[in-house]
Each structure stands twice: as structure tokens, then as C-alpha cells.
Length: 148
Ligand code: SF4
Image (cartoon, rainbow, N blue to C red):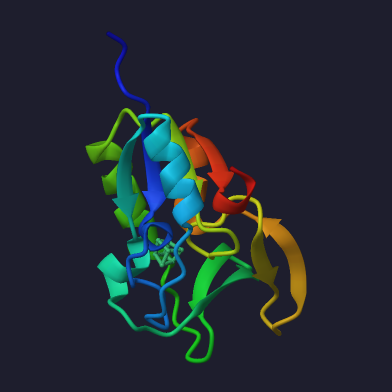
């Protein structure tokens, strides 16, 4: 008997109220599809784990030190804790076959994250979030929920 496909999924897609504004925004179709395929679903939410809910929203920002996740108004750099969470998550779950991230999230977006410069000008809408970048660096296949 073959082993189940293990899929890491942004917890908000499963209906967890872990978004920055504590408003639910699940994607039941994605969860149903994965369940129907018999996948093992492993949920994650770096931002809730690191900063709690609700919390200030963040933007991916191009800085002189690379892409950072900065809070929208107080401009606090929240990159480090998200990277630490992502490294631990993938270390603890080494056999992930697929990563399904919430589209447009600065942590979990796959190719839909918005990147701004330090003056707030939009540079791109095709970026990977901070947690997604770690998945990609480990060679894990990644997809936005809206593209699954
Ligand atoms: S997109 Fe990612 S960080 Fe944001 S609420 Fe969903 S799981 Fe958490």
C-alpha cells in the first residue's frame, strides 16, 4: 500500500480564524479536493504562532538587506520569527509532497505576493511569501490555493 500524499496547507484555508483581522476566509473547495484525493493535510500558520491574532498586517518590502516582512504602519521587521517558524515546521515535517499557500499572503503566497519598495510603491504582484520561500528552498512543490 502506497503512503499518503502529505500536503502542508495554510490553516486559514481550512477555516481557522488566524488571519490578521481574525476574519475567516477559508477555501473549503481546496480542503475537500485534498481530502477526496486521500491526502494527509498538515496545517500551519506562521503569523498566528509568532504574533497572535488579531495583529497588524504586514507587507513584503524590498530593503537594502533583501525582502523583509514589515508591519504595515509601525514598520516593524517580522521576517526573523517567520523564517524560524518555517524552518522548524519543515524540519518537524520532512516528508511534505506539496505546499498549498493562501494567495497574496506575505507569508504564504506562492506567486501572488505583493512586493513594495520602502516608500510603499508596488513593485510586483508575483512574489513568494516568507514561509513559501523556505518551502521552495527545500525543493517542495508549491501552489497558491486559487491555482490548485
Ligand atoms: S495566510 Fe498564512 S500567515 Fe496568513 S493567516 Fe493564513 S496561514 Fe496564517
